[in-house]
Length: 379
Image (tube, rainbow, N blue to C red; front, side, top):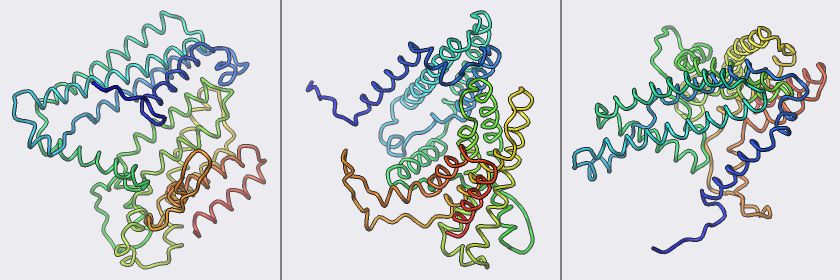
C-alpha cells in the first residue's frame, strides 16, 4: 500500500492540534483555573451541575437519532446482503456514542481538576450520566432494525443540504423549516412574523438549554466575562426564529406577494425576535440571580438587543452571488473575500457591537445598540 504524506489542511493535522490543546489544558490546570475561575473559591457543586448539563445535551443529541441516514444509491446498490444496512448504522451509532463519551470524560476531568470535586461525588454524577447515555444508545439500537428506506433517505437529504450549505458558504440553507400552524385572518407583516415564530416553537427547548448553559458557565467560570456567553448563546437561540423572515428574502415571489416596505417588514419581524430574546434574557437573569451570580440587567438587555438586530441582518440577506469572488492574497493563501463578507453578514455587526459593549458605559452602550439596530434594520 502506498503511504501518503500528511499535508497541511488534512483532518489528521486538525486532530493533532486539537489533541495537543486538550493535553495542554489538562496539564496546565493552574493557568486554566486562573483564566476561567480567577481568585474565586472552588465550586464543586457548580462543576457537577455543569457536567450534568453537558451530559443532558449529549443524551439529547443522541435522542434525535442523527445516525439514522443512508444515501439512496447505497440503499439501491449496496443493500442486498442480510445485515448490511444494520451493520453500517450500528457502527455509526457506536462512533456517535464514543466521541460523546470522550468529550464528557474530558469535560469532567477539566472541571474536577479546576474545582477540586470530591471523587465520590464525581463518581455518582458520572455513573448517572453514563447510565443515561447507555439508555439513549439502547434506544438508538432498537430503532435501527425498524428504520425504513424513506426515513433513511430523508435524513440523508438533510445531510446533503447541510453539506452543500457549508461548501457554498450559504448558512441560510440550514435554517429549520416551518411547522404547521393555523392562524387565520388577513395576511399582514405582523401576522406572518407571528406565524414564523410559532411554527418554529419546537426550538424553544433548545433555547432553554442554552439559557441553562449560560447560567452554569457564569457560575463555574466567574472570571470569564458574561457578555460573550450571553451573546453567543443568545444568537444561537434566536437564529431559528428568524426563519420566517429568511423565507421572504429567499423567495422574491413570496416577498412581492406581501405588501409593505422592506424596512417595515424587518422592523416587524425584528420586534418579535427581540421579544423572544427579552424572555430568554429574563430566564438567564433569573437563573443567575438564583445561584447568587447576578448580571447587570441593563447591559445584558442591550447585548441581547444587539444580538436580535444581528439575527435580523443575518436572515434578511440577499441570495449569495458567485459571479465575482474577489480573490485576495492574504499571505497564507487565497481568500474569496466576497464570499466571506456574504457569509459573515449579521455576525460581523454582532461581534463589533458586543466588543464595544463589553467595555463601554451605560450611555455609550445605548448609543452603540441604537446604531447597530439602525444598521441592521435599514440595510
